[in-house]
Image 1 (tube, helix red, strand yellow):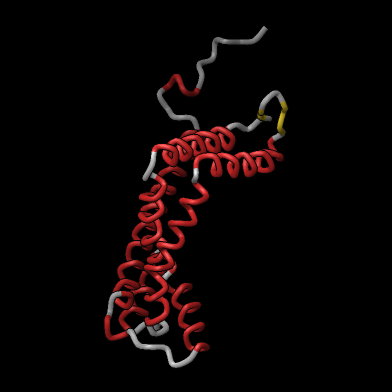
Image 2 (cartoon, helix red, strand yellow; image 1 turned 120 degrees about the vertical axis):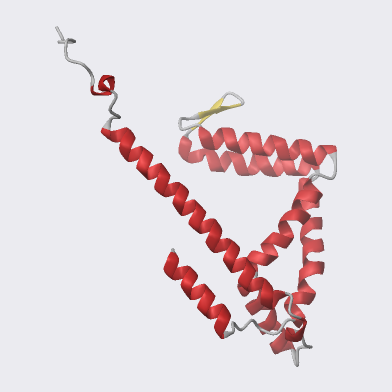
Amino acid sequence: MADFSAPLPQAGGAAPADDAGATSASMCAKALDRNEWRSAFTRVKVLSRSFFDPREFSRPASQADWLERVSVNAAHFKMLYALIFLPVLVHTMLSSMSLRLGSCVLVVLWGYALRTTGPLNVFGLEVSAGQKLYVLVPVSVVIGLLTGMINALVYATVIFACVTMPHMSFHEPARLDALDALELQTLSEGS
């Protein structure tokens, strides 16, 4: 028989060692998240100075210059371009009832599939955890085709390209000045 006369460590009011470690780990994760958000915000602030500066726009001299500008600006301003693309995509995906329904179905489907750790039962077939992706991608494509989400995604991409390609083409390749470099350096040292 087991001896139940000894009190458990939790009964004395002290937190178990695992909970204390988990609590400090969650506090570190929150601080890290705050630092990451602060870092991203500062990076966007620094990049936006150059992004909106009208003195940094000119006509490309040749096709090679144009290609260099597009590739350098796409890599340099990718965070700002993503911030431009996100509202375009959200507005497009929420523009009709079928797109809203398809978006909700996809979010629920992927959320359920990624949250479950064991095998899934799809239409009577058991799908192992390693094969979830092989089922989710084709089902997502079919849902996208049935609800018109593929067309909406292509439309959002074309609108995004029409808005950002002139900026990528005419903005001189990004060069950070001394103040920007100093601000980004102190940002990287702080994290």
